[in-house]
Length: 487
Image 1 (cartoon, rainbow, N blue to C red):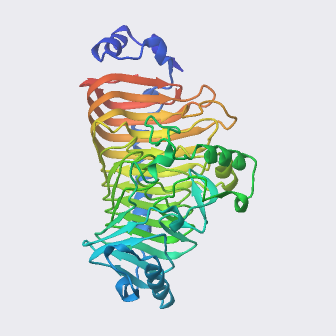
Image 2: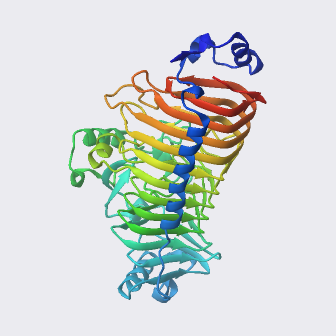
Image 3: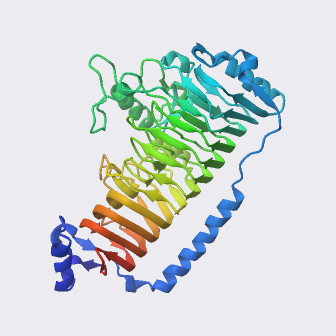
């Protein structure tokens, strides 16, 4: 272990004076490991081997294909007049398509008002550029309750707006829009001020707080999921799109906007392709894309402008995540653009099942409102094993903090499930402007292991920030304000 205060005087002066760091020598505490503890050649070799696996993910994850049959929702009574409730017509078209062996359920020319849509195997819900599905804001349109996850906890809750359970070969495609119609008077006020710097509540409107607290207790007490009834009267906002326990999933081309809650949350799915989707929702908990306990996922060519994390990889919360023991793994994120959001590419915080083998490449992030670039968030209540995160060729225009690994998220060090974070390789990252470079702090009993930065350049920054409790940290050709950063 190397104490920051033992670094050469010129180095300390650089950190304190040249960068006007807000973090003092004593506040930084111990900075673990040295680049010399592992040669740069060895580090580069391991990263190259890892990216070979990324290429395998790219090749193996294939979008589902569908028979050349078209089922136009208008033939089943749908009307794109912004007024007619098309719930039954959409259900009839999907059922007919499924029974015929699959094909395309076509939504075109108009604005179609609808309640919950439940996809079935071999169905591609295709929305053309001139069409919008606008979802009814009456919560009763999302009953009866379905088996779903909410903030990483299993419940019987409101149906996601677009939902599928246990299906194979499903898709939502096209250049059209799905609009949840959530706003400051609909859905969003249920958030209240719970875990938020913004009070979304409206006087006299109930919020999620009481039900959320009770659900936490039900989970810790192992109450059977069938008895966790959290739909009507609980005020837990539904996810917009949630394929659950599905195989061969494609979400392509659409715009998702005004979501009640998370925008896209595949759960326990395998072979998932998310391509050229626009995620545009600024409400509370408007995470863009949250693959949760999923395997073999490709997220590419997407645009994010969200009120919470742009991409957040998850694996279940606390007792539920540990009971299911299903990590998210083999995830490739490529050629995406992030604007507003709490984080660009994030792992956590519902992370108790673990995450491994995540690859991020050729992404652009920038906004004064983008709080963090690359982030890992957990604590000793969540726990989890997070390993093998590889990042290359990422450009950050403006961000508040570039790299964050946070073991003190929300509840902090208040549990008995110590997280492990190891094997993070970041290379060819260029950050033009940041308030600080690092907010990285492990536990003394569980230091962050093998964090390696190569060819990373942070140009205009106010502070280095925090690097504390690491084991085998390496920085090779890393500059901050044009000055080499060495440990």
